[in-house]
Image (tube, rainbow, N blue to C red; front, side):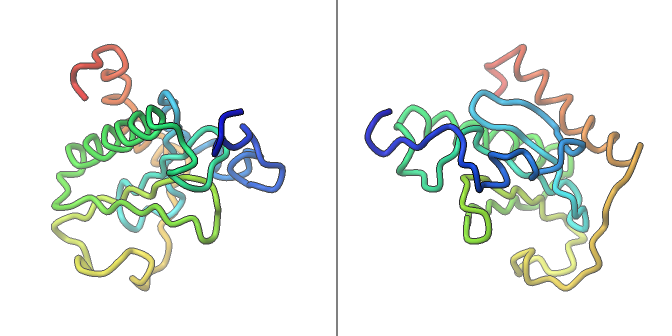
Length: 155
């Protein structure tokens, strides 16, 4: 293992253990990360991009991994912006509650109830999509990502 590199899995990390995000929210398997629909869809399209191996800081990654991971985050963000006609995408990489590299990508729309506030501070009742509504949303986001896999120049 190279200096600064972390093990592939951490036995106490819910992302490494596979208990978060939920498997039924899976959107796409990217090269170094996976995309999942966030459980709360109050902000439509809220997606989480999770690094596939355990690391808690960007500086733990090799430069080539950092570059590739940012490209994957960018690809998902661009896809969300196009699908939802977002006025802005919020990128959240915190790690305070879950110390595992993961981004929350949140499309901010024209009808956003609090466009200048972080999503965490907007009081709301969570909107949890179930069944076909969840799957339709996942498929809507996944389709352009699959197209990119077959045509990498689009990214």
